[in-house]
Image 1 (cartoon, rainbow, N blue to C red):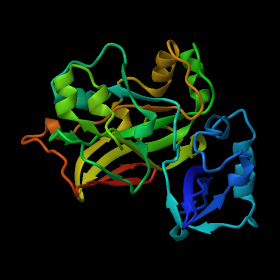
Image 2: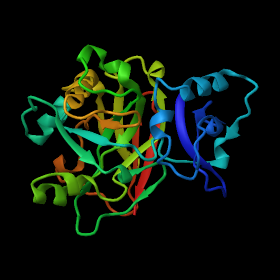
Image 3: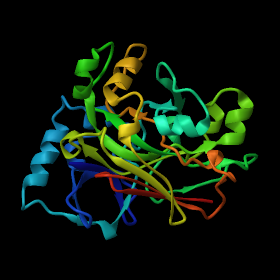
Image 4: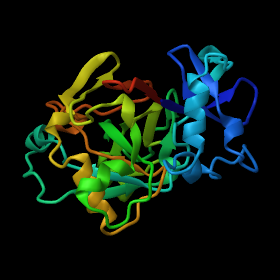
Length: 291
């Protein structure tokens, strides 16, 4: 399935469903039983929990040819996980990116975080952070957790994955490099675009063999493959779950390939009006604009 959150035109209700194709989707909001559909922080763990009935019911509805569909021209797509419990990011996790940065690959995963409120959806306009003139893009494969993971074996890690999505780990480099730690530079408003959907694991046979790229104003500036990942998804999940419980709907951003702006000669810094497109095999295109 391709899971989405969306709004209908002129309706503030945040709805949940699945893509049928590029032009239609199925509404599954009524399957949630949420007490207030205007609240996006209610039911996130339940709706993405592989051990709860919501996903199975939505899958059956999607398979029913008589289910009514909605045209994508009548909706606004939101982030497929509108308010994750956690956003955990991994730094320097592509061998070719570590090389371009002039850094040795880390011996263990380098983890940092973004705030949950940083997550925005496809088409969202991201404000330039005041005081930073070195804002950068980073195409990333996001892993969405679907089952609580706490001190698990690496061999069991993939059974805790719901699916995958495109993400953009936007970075205010002036803040990041000046502070000596990364929280402010990685957590400016809107600095975690993701979407347009979550592809469940059955749609992505091998997440470690996906082409990943980013286009800036139509020009390809990042172009690599998840084959370059230093730490694969099972190792990342087991490593993180050794010190913090991962819950359904939590995100892991697995790192970015080479081609980031600060490493180019001359460097590329994002400016108002710049359009970014993250594209990963099987996961669609995530487009956002700086403002």
